[in-house]
Length: 408
Image (tube, rainbow, N blue to C red; front, side, top):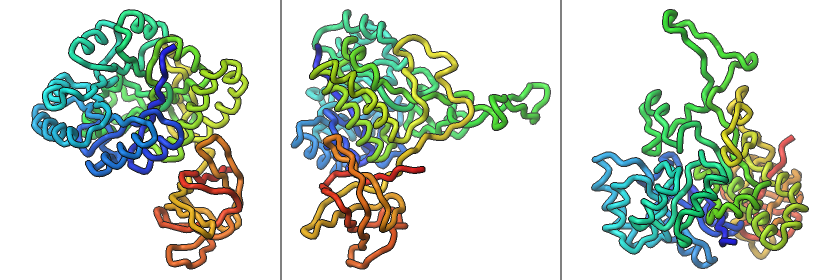
């Protein structure tokens, strides 16, 4: 069986560190340009250096996305950007555009290159094409079934790698190449500025009656025609491994540290349990399903892996997420008094019982005994987002533990 990599997204340096601590073998990030998540915080050059050093110290890798579909005006900037990355030295670049690929090979001839799912990688001929040009890995289109991936594996060189999405939001458009956002708002999804119009509510207009909007009733609130369920393959780790996939990719560079930690920790345990003993993996299935449901998500689907999805893969009555837990903060350090420092993300109060999520898989319920600002003043609650606070909790708390609260 091939070695399996767990690849986790990070939209900021703090989230990168969380991903690594909670089980990522590799993390993919975007710089300040040429990636497909323009609204993410993304990484400056200095943050990339710090993140790569943090990951490498812990045996993890960092890949940088440069996967826009480039226009003429982009190409000079791409070359300058790759010159900067030559000094920063990520472990690989993720690219979709052949012109950008050619620049990368010229500027960074020794850099490992992975071909993004945006490049429409649906057959083994495409894999062989990119392999012939020097690509190490190709990310499969999300429209592929496991049967198709198995066939690709059988037709490509042993040292070529397959990366596939196994969890996260599904795009309504083919391999993520969408024109809706550009048409409606002028913000191009293929340049990293998608406004997610697939999540909007739509009505029908008959061409001879302009301005007369007729709702498409799924229920009294109308319908969300393009709103896909989220992909979740936690119950199918054996099939993914047996198909010959080298890298299990999680979607979500816009997600919080709580989401990243929850998904990374759960899939890490599932992969490790299965590799240790398939019976152990099966016996822990309810724990995996319970834990994966604790991060923000829509309803789940297996996407295209077991055949073309039908209408049950869509959510027609709402575009909202299920949110059973609220992210309160991540422990940055613990002092000699036993207080822990966090940057507060959502409001909580003294006397509340909250849950501590640990990288090793344990969850602890603890009481908030005290809240103090940086000057040492006691607080009854923490109402201001992003405020640095010292928290007294009645439990064993360490750096990188995550504080979360279960919602009623």
